[in-house]
Image 1: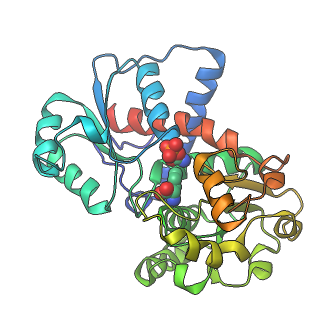
Image 2 (image 1 turned 45 degrees about the horizontal axis):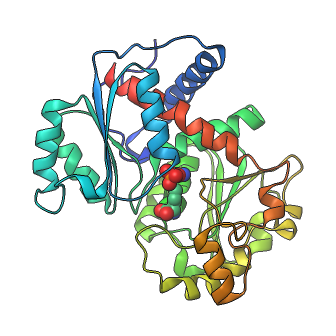
Image 3 (image 1 turned 180 degrees about the vertical axis):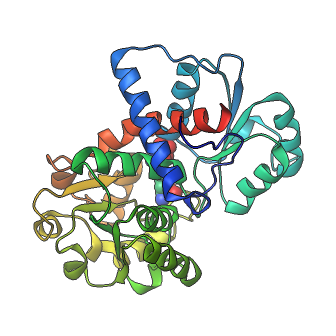
Length: 330
Ligand code: CP
Ligand code: NVA
């Protein structure tokens, strides 16, 4: 039997101990093995969940839907246009209604305060499917993918290149600190995470014998890295006007073959996706036309290389989300 986290919300890894995170990763591995073997696991047949998305999604939505169905649950999806939430009804009122009908609520949206408010009022577990500040279900999939590659987590050197104060930068810093990976963010100073969160991460890292480093020096930051991670340069919810500045700020932090050449032997490349590694998207093509660049946070060469674990990472979203729902509902 694992740790009992029944009834808990899953809003940020800050709320979870390393032992609880370990339990969720191990449970995810069990679910992955069952899925691979075709072993049925419809163990939550009487339950129903609702997925609230105020921002777009492919991986997170599909992971919650498939995981919910694999566990035997009823699943309702509500997109930004098809509910009253936020427009005619407050988050608190929405939470009190949905909490009477559903056994669990997933929310993807803007401020962390919104998912916190849902959690405060719902009376059932609330799972954060991404806010402006945190993306905790992504973290479990990332940790699981790293462990699948190296066989362990503690002591690995993890480097994040890009917007280090977005939901991924914040979450990865906390996830590494909790699980004993040495975290380095390579970014311009103005895109470093907020000082208060850095201070929290440093304190957590101390307890787990690892380090937190923020640097503007891409060469120093990538040297000896076991894992190189990046994310898109402009996140959902940010205005289109920031592209020009962000491209200038982050071009030196692009993950390319020169950056990968600095890394440790056996290093891997990771990205939460979606990614602008070519011009085969409307935004990618538009940026190419406006700014003359055909690749952004990662080159197509690195994205398509043998070191790239991005699709394993995407698959692991489903197994880890299943573990979170199972552990908090069962
Ligand atoms: N990585 C991730 O959260 O992807 P989606 O935006 O497609 O859900
Ligand atoms: N930082 C990105 C992550 C997408 C999964 C965003 O918020 O758009």
